[in-house]
Image (cartoon, rainbow, N blue to C red; front, side):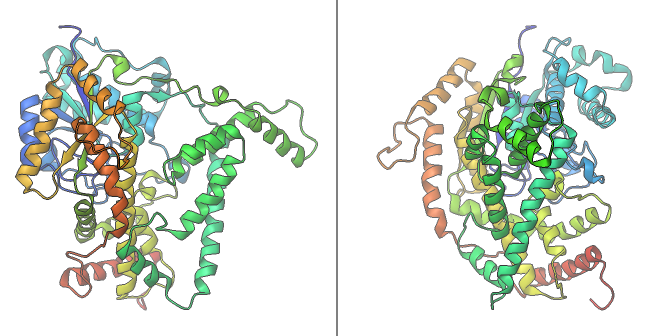
Amino acid sequence: AANFFPPAISLDISQGHDLSFIHAQQKINNIIDDDIGRKRTAATRGHVVSADSVQAYRGVDIGANKPTSQEMERTPHHLVNVVDPPTDPSKAASYNAADWMRDARYVIRELTSFDGDVGDDDDEERAEGDGNDDALMRRETIEKALSQSLGVSDSDEKTIHTTKPTILPVVVGGTMMYLQWLVHGRPDAIRPTEEAVERAADKINEFRREAEDTTAIMASKSSSDSLGKSTEKDETIITDEDDESDVAAWKAASTYVSSLGPVFTQRVDKLPGRDWYRLRRLLEVAYTIASKNKPTSQPSSAGANNNSEHEILQNLTEKQVYTGIRSGSLPDLGYDVRCFFLCPDERMTHFHTVDHRCEQMLMRGLLRETASLHASGGLPEESQVTRAIGYRQALEYLKRKDAKRNDHGALMGFMDVFSAATRQYGKKQMQWFRRDAEFAFIPVQMECEKGKRVGGAAKMIADMCKLSAVDFEAELSSSATNNVDGSEESGGGGLPLSARTKLDNERQGKKMKFFLSKRVSLIDGSDDFLTVLAEADECTKQVQGLGEEF
């Protein structure tokens, strides 16, 4: 019995919403409702551990689509509202994947361990957190939430392991790196120096500013309204080029990072889409390695310094940068981990749900919340919240040049960009998890009545959780070894459920270029649209500090 640990389940629902048992990446669709959440958590004594990089921040609610206080009271949620949005630009990236992994492992250990038998965080991770005031404050918040959810008083906290019931941790979210680290382990990438972090951020921002300036010049030469043109394009067809300046900046920045050396070329080629975070991390690693391996003698000129750095990076081997060895995953700690990706069986319907979800966020006050965060200094450049889908587009809209009142076109353009970015993220999640052999794909029937849709997905998860660890691994291995490349020759009829779902999901991608977006609630001229427009004008005035003449 001392060696038994309840399974820890990592789940993603391709950005599901309003869930208790499974509360996933917040922006897209309502797949599993509160009733199923209560039913499943009651049956398993489950607690939700959020794997959402935005839900961790206090005061960031609508854009993160956090569970309500009532939902969290019914089903305990952890790692929600544990840090304040950074107001100091130098600490914009203060809560990262390493912090979350350390916190998630701690919560899971507290929920599952008996007399502290589960392996503790390694010495390096403990050293990172213990000397950091922010980490200590965050740990206190997490411990308080744990005690409340388990019904343990302050005087009883030392006996928590021997008195609490068996708890099933359900790790839920759409932040792909968080889930990857927890399931596969933390990579052994070199820790960057502060100088390298600052230098990399400056370099990335330089590429972005140059691209924005170039795009603005090109737009000014056009006789048509660029915002109206992009609106029409985004409304009809989904393309990867939903932001011309971002595409141009990425091309220039990724080319630069690739030029640093063969090792970096290989890494850039493997990046999924325009992943700015990882590109910046590559630069941080490159600059750190170069600074640590520079000759001790001072170069005679700046050119000599650059040549020395160039030579160091060009001659690096893969093992000098990244060995590929990961450590500290839940399986490493002895947990039986079951990973699921809840996959919509009809991507067209799913994307329509995405658009409607974005409309609902605006009707609930996303622009008002963004303006409030901006006023409090909670949206410094490059922070996790500022870069998050929804807040990024909202802030760009509120800061738009030549803003004017009652601008229907500007609001509609913003809505198109917001919806397109959210759909693109959903597409990116599908691509990411199709490549991860540890995740079983569970089909969610989008066209079915809600109760049937929810019940069917929940039953499939429950059935797969009942399998022994050996049988579950066999199911995943069978899926991974079959032909799931989307080729027309592979019918998929004899494949396991997960493999069939992956194959169908990938094949549907070819038809998505014909997707037509349409409004459900915020139709131009409707009462709901005019209400949001009036709020948008007030928020624009607040963010830009405009006078009464606006």
